[in-house]
Image 1: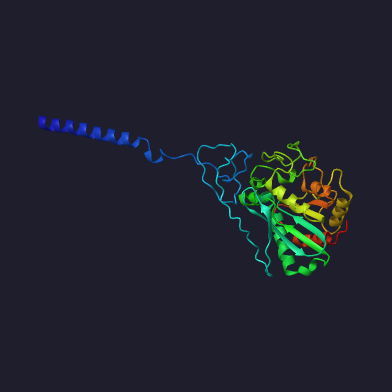
Image 2: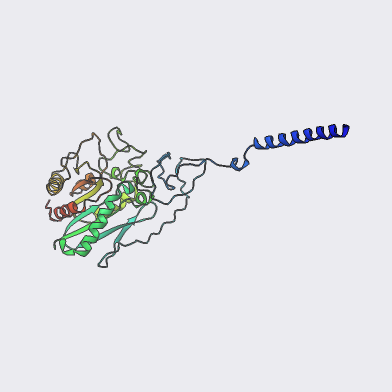
Amino acid sequence: MKNHIGLFLIGIIVGGASMFFVLGFGQAPDSSHSDQRLLLTQTPGNLPQLIMLEPTNVLQESTQTPISATITTGPIPASTPITISSTPTSLNLLNEQRPEVIGYSLEGRPLQIYKFGSGERERMIVADIHGGDEWNTRTLANQLIKYLNQYPDVVPADNTLFILASLNPDGEARAHNKYGRLNHNGVDLNRNFPVNWLVDWERAECWNYLPSSGGSGPGSEAEVQVLINFIENHQIEALISYHSAALGIFPGGAPWDENSIRLAESIAQVSTYPFPPLDTGCTYSGTLPDYAVSKGIAAVDLELMDHIDTDFDQNLKVLNVLLNFAP
């Protein structure tokens, strides 16, 4: 009888200990999740110096760079190595034609111009000044380049046309959204030209999605300096600077230049782009058309209808206006 009682007590003790062990193990911390790190929203790895990082869910079309859990927002060190191929990549054109490299961006990307015709009356198209934020302007410029390469006789015998498809290749490469708008220094290139220049401006009615500036001084940016040098070494009579989207046609000059108004009116007659343009109340400073007017060039900012389409058929008519415009 005593042996049976002893065995019964031993069974209770062993069973209770086993139950305690099982319950204790089941409540222990799950070490498989203890080393998980906070996942941060991806942002472009090569943001301009003046842009503060902020969470975003927009699709980035540039190459993503892993970022650490600690974010710094200071300037990019001058010693940061930038490896960019400076070899120009030509478009796949029906008739062989290579662009002229007129200079380089801050990150070392080539600024390339395609030339059509050889006449004395020079015309120019500049696109993608706001990089990846207005990427459809670059697409339009490339479409026009391919069209003119296939149909070179469109350019009158007395004309020469220059097309710069991207003044801001660094922004274009960075992202196709607001993060691609500025150059590597965080400067709005269309506010850096040395006419009516301001380092800052009233933001209420203007583009204000990210911090930006007009540069450290008028014409301070490499891309702007390259274009200024090109313009000053040519006799350009009329110029279109393509933008997006929807505001209309803005003549250069403050007040608007008479020849630039005539160019804007002529474009409006063959297109759906409005002139006068929509007035949002924004004051525009240091623009390419203002600078061009100071050099005796009839010039306009022309806004495409949206941020995606190129309005190619309309812009073939606009091209004809530009080629035949007489200042």
